[in-house]
Structures are given as structure tokens and as C-alpha cells.
Length: 157
Image (cartoon, rainbow, N blue to C red; front, side, top):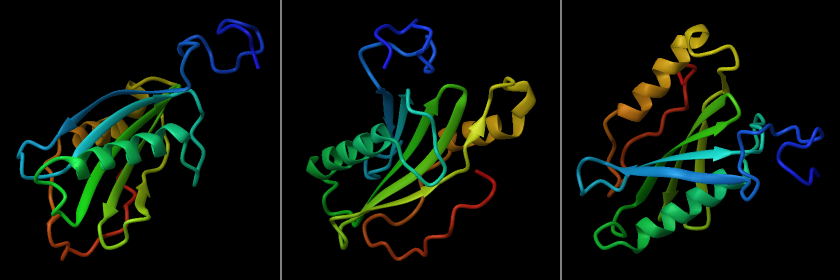
């Protein structure tokens, strides 16, 4: 483990502050106050791995879901959905995470593939547009009753 962020053996690079491994950069709520949807944006020093969540992604998800369940007007919803935009180095992945009140001990998770921007946004415009569409998208679904059928995450995100 490097003693300083700029040490030669620090493979994390200088973009990460030495006092944190991951950081919640911010979150947004759905436009309609009646919808419990949250978008969360985290920066993580752990590299993204396929089929494995980072500690920051899990911690932020549980924390925001617990916060939302405690707020007035939201605990009567069956689902609390969160979209997590997780950035590590020049890589981004989008996680759809939701808590189902009928299965309270578990989080349901769908993950996009890891999108790589090491060669810049211009060389990966399709993924950049996908991210922007997810950020700007409208909240959908019946979170109170949960009658909709959950479709698998497609190759488009």
C-alpha cells in the first residue's frame, strides 16, 4: 500500500484524494415528488470488475434506500429504485438497484457493461450518449404495486 497518493507504487493514480476510497458525488430525485426514484453518482478508486460490485456501490445503495424508506410518503411503495452511475478511472457503469418490500433483506441489481473512456469521449460517443440518456430519462414503473414485469438489462446500456 502506498504511503502517499503520488508514490510510484500507487496504481490508483493521482485523481483520487488520499482520504477516501469512494465518494458519493451527489444524487437527484425524480421530478415528481410522488416517485421514489433516485439517481446517485459515485466516484470509486476500486477498479470496476465484471460481476462484482464495489463497496461504494453497495454502501451508497443501501444508504439511499434506507433514507428513502424512512421518509414520509415513500414507505408505502413496494419498490425503491436507484440508478447508480459509478465512475472509476476512465470507466463508467450504470447500476439499476431496487429494494422490494416483499423481499426486504435483498437488493435486486442489474448492471450495464463497463464502458471505457480511456481514449476519450469522441472515441466512444455511443456509450456517452447512453449515459446522458440514462441521466436525463424519465422515471417509469408502478413502484407502489409492482405489477410490471422486470425486463433484463439489454445491450444498449
